[in-house]
Length: 463
Image 1: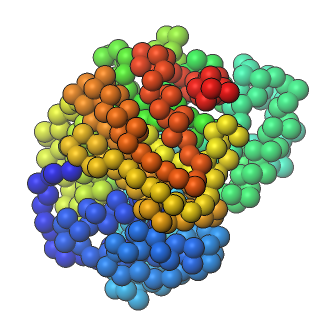
Image 2 (image 1 turned 30 degrees about the vertical axis):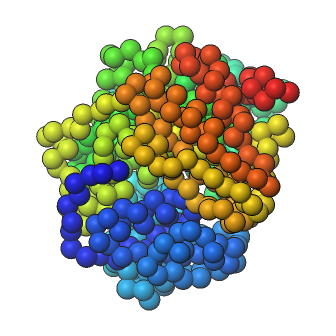
């Protein structure tokens, strides 16, 4: 992305992450003269981001708890390498308030909002209450229910209408979320979610929330200066999901009335401003297709996987803005003169997985991997090159392909052309599914909701 970036004083950035987001952060750091430090597990020793970084340090064995979630070891490496900034990317430790606190206690610069903000917004129950106080609409739901109090589920469910979503109060990205249509399956499903949350997040607390049948998943990209001033960079459509994990995203979200779009952006900014939010964040909403009413879902206190779509239509480098905010160079000009949003961008996540077998991962050797050549209309965010091996230890995303067009129709055409250029051998992928989605009349007419993939997978895959 050709941007006129301000070149600040030299800094060294430790990237507490891996894969394509680490490559992404390294690219911006190189453009402004910041040196970079990578950390890697034994399974990632030959990864592209390790090669691209100025320095790289082995952090442990492949399981994330022994490597990328080892807060103490990461900070030790930051100090040993003389890095002064820590960028967490997304996932892993990005929304871990304890890690953010340890970074700051070590005298390092944390790229992200304050640990207290991460803590309260990462607790879905507390975040719902903050949204309510900020006059942002929320769906009917229950208070937090601890793993030892699941017997109270029936009482709360009687105060709500089925279907319901059962969510972990911690975590993010839809992990562990389950829907339940009636009382009969409530306790069993809630117990499953609670046990998974305890295992993944160390907290088995859950809550119930009314489930909108015909819903779209819309999110607003916000950026706060830490003093109550917040601007936004538009919205994104993220409704095409499998197991509550996004597959195709686009910006701006299509077919939303102008007044609803404006109100949603205002609500997102108002929520962030109420917390004196600092840096990049995303406020996610459920949009009820029946009446275009929107409701707060959650806030992610980090950069998103789908941030390139927003960068394409805003011509802003969000990683650059994050780094400038972190070192005290607040992008105040974007408060007074918000960027003009133009064109349309679509992102497809290319995964090594088997859609026809419930999207199970498909690790293996990438004997052939040919992706489209980047251009003004096509952006590639890849974590692998030909000859690499996708291990079974991490998320199996091979690359993100982003298209840009003067309007949505052109962006779809550009994406289809890009997908046709992809060649992958010896690893099963979702490439055929992505092509089928882009060609489907429901997608072309922007009529896909959050159950689109679940309801149409058989037809899309020709099964």
